Image (cartoon, rainbow, N blue to C red; front, side, top):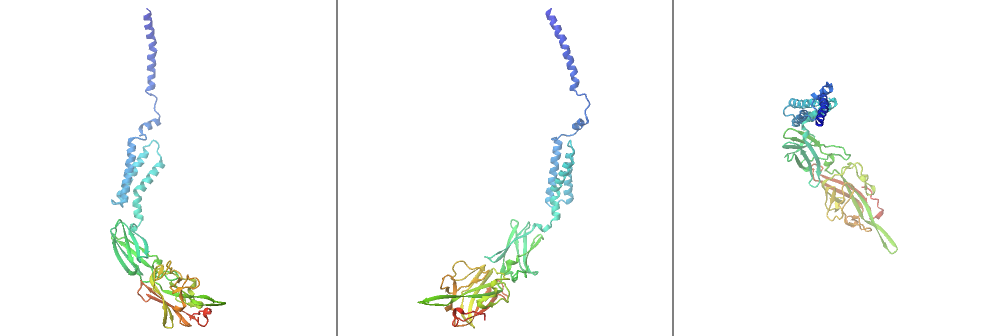
Length: 406
């Protein structure tokens, strides 16, 4: 009996549980009407959707393709490059539009970047001249080999170079390019026809290098004027008396030991000349340009027409001079330079001088003649000679001689 009652009680308790399950079903089915925002979310692809991802990737691939065509100079034509670029831009715009929130700023930035990538190279080609791929560089002077050197660079097979002066071709040569460059080496002696500058530094001769490639590109550059001052046009001398003092018991005597001879060569005014006291008007070294080149200098000391002494040949290479018997560093030719002598001064034993007994032949007018022989130019000025003279009265006046110009 009690068992039957228990079953009846259990059956009675089970009925409310069944009713509860039925009532909760409508909540799971979401019968309430959807909002408008919910409809948009359901109809638009969410970020990360394969459709939008592929659209973005396709857009940039097309943009890069347009950029490659543009880099090749628009070989399929500017119109084709533009169409390809616009297709890529269209893909990127559509990708942005399919996002839940449309951003006009992002669209504008994407379009701008895409156009720069795709059409930038094509625009550069249109703006930059076609011969911009040629470069004429590194124009230099090699003092050791006496050559002008320069490089031609570019994407072509060969180039022809000329060096001209006032429109007249003085030299021409052709070279093939290796790894997009060629080095030209031109002996200065093959085209030099006079200094580029005067002693004031003004350009009087403008040498121009012109290059033409086998595909028609051209470029020209002026050689730096200072590179081509190769010819000595002026020279001058000055002398300094050197004395020695000897003592015998209570008697002291001072007499001339010899002279220090100095020279200056290069470019300066033709009116510069010897002055009293063994000096020269170029002592201040004003309005002067040195000449770094190859030439020789020789000093001759003359009394009348008779040569009393002459120096060994002085050889100049670039900026330095040398001769037989020179000790220590070679003197520089870009200022007053001490010339070879026959001995050292008596008091210090360190200054090379022309000893009195090696050239002096009684009082009189002595001419110090400099003969400069230029290597590069065979015209009238190939050999340049200067004469500076002073009166040496050492027999009568000894160390009191005024050495006036004569």
